Length: 285
Image (cartoon, rainbow, N blue to C red; front, top):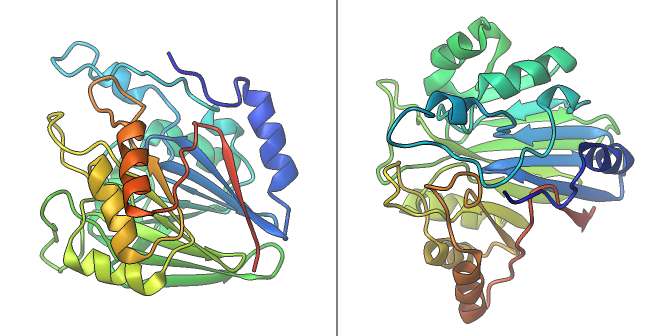
């Protein structure tokens, strides 16, 4: 089994506590699968954390066992202080009660942002009334002041597994989030393929960093961008640096970072491959 860059939980937690109050930089950690931790000036946001073995346990006796290939970075109850938790959609590796509920317990004032289309299902999964959740739809933006009094903004953009799916109220079932913090724009795509409306939205924001899935299609699960498609999407939208994700959690559902890197190099796209637990630092602007 692969181990996170920080092979001990205390090392990661020490680094997080040391860097999270830094107002001169934005710090980003890849948590595994689609999970990203973002910190600046004392404010911390976490997107799609999956820090349990709930899927391994659920599918242990099935024809699709979710066998881990990367060890868990940190126990969810130790991830604090966290101000905002964002879930992109209802798949358990992006909305995991075994991860989110312990985080809520340790961070009782946390704001929970979820797709409006899924708010009832998320409330049932987390055993929370809907009013404890903040619904988001494509084009919505939430603005607030962080702990250092600087503004933070979270923009929702539509996402799609092959085809864009909406409920009867025209709310997307899948979202990504563009987070403006410390003068930087961070795009966490969740699960998605490229489609014209997404290309247009991301091009408009011109993110400094984007976390894009590269596991592609064909594993018996809903499709995402392939290695080549992620690189091409970054090229087309003007993303300044692209980080691959969703490729090294389960044996049956992987991607190839070498193929991704080669495509980025061919296209002249700036990229960085982050190990689970590795931090990326951007100077504030």
